[in-house]
Length: 120
Length: 108
Image (cartoon, rainbow over all chains, first blue to last red; front, side, top):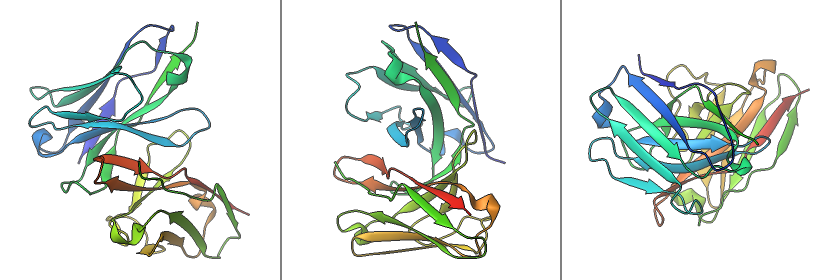
């Protein structure tokens, strides 16, 4: 069965960086884009961007001033999200999600979420 | 960018039908997806492409989309349906995916 398993909770200080991994199994990794979504405490879901696993190209939501980087390692079926220059506003649970084939399709499988806490 | 508007809360008695709306300009021309999100868990896709249900989702969950409003309906509501529900679509102009603000469903 399709599974997306994310790395564990991270506690960071302001200004630091964090890398979140999303290890996939149960399907052909290169057949599906991976998207990243976050939810800050008390807020709704916010889409962050996508990575084309096959070609490696990416698209990021605006407003992060280049602080987001999405990459993948096809040899181990894993996608990564790097967030740099962390502030308390980046405290959130981060999810990876698999996009069903069509560009306008839904996110049919999600990781379990990774809590990132940023505090001095 | 494209904006999706959802009422923040909805309360429904057990056994009744919950209807959650998602408003957007000409949303009826787009494919809308709905997710159920319970605290501490990953979101779950409950309706996609306006009205299709993934395997394993009960028939009690249904969707429609017309004009400027998409709707997720849950019939015969149960206590286990309490969750936040989000609509989502692809904004082709920006190639962004957009979520609504979410509706918190409370079962009385």
